[in-house]
Image (cartoon, rainbow, N blue to C red):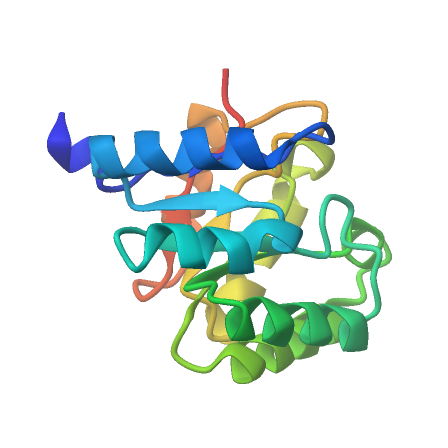
Length: 185
């Protein structure tokens, strides 16, 4: 069980999240020895001071729909790292996928990875909105763009991780990119 917990991002991203909720999440994460806590960007600095390096902190940028401009996402990413984040989960603009604006998606991922340096980047593609060809294309783009992970979902969409999606991603993502299943039921 411990080896599974080491892969879990203990997460709270609901609209009504309070500081008390964040402290409880952080304490649980430390007790369970999970991979990280994933929290709203507005709590990163405070959580960093609270945790004092006991566990990694992950936050989200472009959340939850990915509609922000690349410049905004880069700013969000840099700000998160400066405030103590160890990992960044960025949401791809789903409209860019639907419009087949793959060059823009690749450039955006590269810019964000450059902005955060050696910190971990997870690219959320929100699989519930994509057809199979789009999922395969996103595996290719994420691989070519230098991301550390491809992630299935924000947990805010119409569905989460499915076994079929994980199998498809495993088949099409590069060997240097890990897969993060999220929002499954």
